Length: 302
Image 1 (cartoon, rainbow, N blue to C red):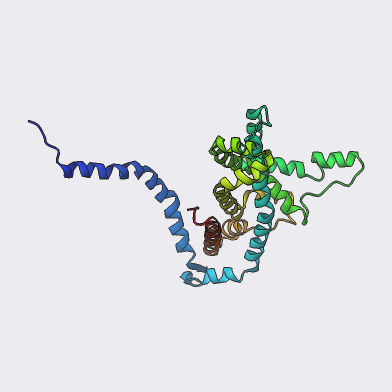
Image 2 (image 1 turned 30 degrees about the vertical axis):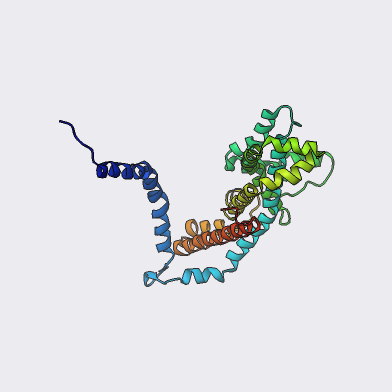
C-alpha cells in the first residue's frame, strides 16, 4: 500500500528541520550565556546586609556605580589605553596587509606566519613573556642598559604603564586584524590595478586612493572589534600587576574592579552591577561607532 505524503506533512518536516539544526547551539548558548546573565542581572538588584540579609534594592547598585570614583578611574584608564591601542593596531594591521598584497615581499608565507604567529600564543603566555622583557632588574633590556652603563628604562612606571600594556595587546592582536584586512584586499578586482597602472599611479597612490577606500567598510568593522576589545581589557594589567603593584591598582580597569569586588571583597551584588554597567558602555559605544560610520558611508555599512 502506497503512503501519500501530503503537503502539510512535508511542510512540517521542512519547517522543523532548521530548528533541530540550531538546537545544540541554542541549548549551549542558553545554558552558558543567557542563564548566567539572568542570574547576574538578578544579583545586581539585591544587596547583602548583615542585619536584613539579602535585600531587594532596585537599581541602587547602579546608582552607586555612577558616583563611584574607583569605577570611573578605571574607565579613564581604559579610554586612555584605547587611544593608544586602537589607532596603532589598525595602522600596523593595515600596513602589513597592504605590504603582503603587493609583490614587494618574496617569501609571503613567512611574512604571513610572522605576523599571525603572536595571535596563536595564549594571552597569558604573551603577557608573562613581555613582563619578563619589561623587568627592570632581570629583563634583557635592563641588562643591556646596565652593560652600557645606562639607566634601565622602567616600562612599568606610572607614566609608561599604558603604552607598555598597549604594546603587549598590539603585538598579540595585530595578526587577527591583519587576516581580516588582507582578506578584504584580496576581493578587490585586479582590473583596477591594471587601470591604475595605465593612469601612471604608483603602489602608494593606488593603495591610498583605491584600495583603502574600497575596504573602508571592513576597516570600520575592525575598528568596532578593536573598541570592544579595549573595553574588555583585563588579562594584561591583571597579570602585570604582580610586577607593578603600586601602579596597577585594584580598580585599574572596570573589569579588574568587578573581579576584585566579586572574588576578593565578596560584594557579588555590586560586582554584578559593575559588570552590567561595563556591558552597557560597550553596547552604547559600539552602537554610536557603527551609526557614525554608517552615516559617513551613506548607509552602506549594515
